[in-house]
Amino acid sequence: MKQEKTTAAMGRPREFDTDDALNRAMHVFWRKGYLGTSLSDLTEAMGINRPSLYAAFGNKESLFRKVLDRYADGPSAYLREALKEPTARQVVERMMYGVVDLGTDPRNPPGCLWVHGTLSCGDPADPIRQELSARRASSEAALRNRFERAISEGDLPADSDPDALARFVITVNCGISVLAATGTTQVELLRVVKTALQAWPK
Image (tube, rainbow, N blue to C red):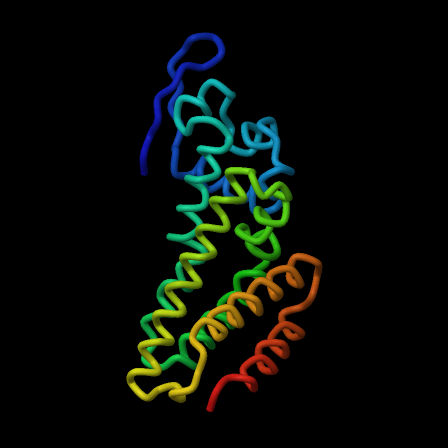
């Protein structure tokens, strides 16, 4: 647990748990998206004032980037762990079932923080949208590399298209996240996963 000491409005030193504050910020961004989240939303949820927020985390953009790292290492770490599964199909199963579990867990805001953030940034020149696009491209590249390995090992047919397969998985996962955010139930989403897996190369 990391304690951050900042100066409160009356000039007195104030200590707060930066890890807890970052988790609280993550849930606000997750629920409202990047553009939908105000500094007032953040300071209220984090239990700190604006000077403390700036001192500990920088501006809103800087805080969001830290939140994305926290999200990648925490709630969505299953995506990275899935790449270690022994077969390509098991990789995809773990990812797809994982995104359903995450998006419908009542302890979390519905859907996916990354998808919410992307959809809330419409301007292609927006640095946050560019950051999110770069992270999506990195995830897609990691999947493509995993599927290329699966082809070389004979785990996938030799004529499989690793680019298309990686994009297929990302597309299905993003769609599941959007549906989860709009109230689709876990049972309904699991049926989507079952249907998607039927299209997986034998």
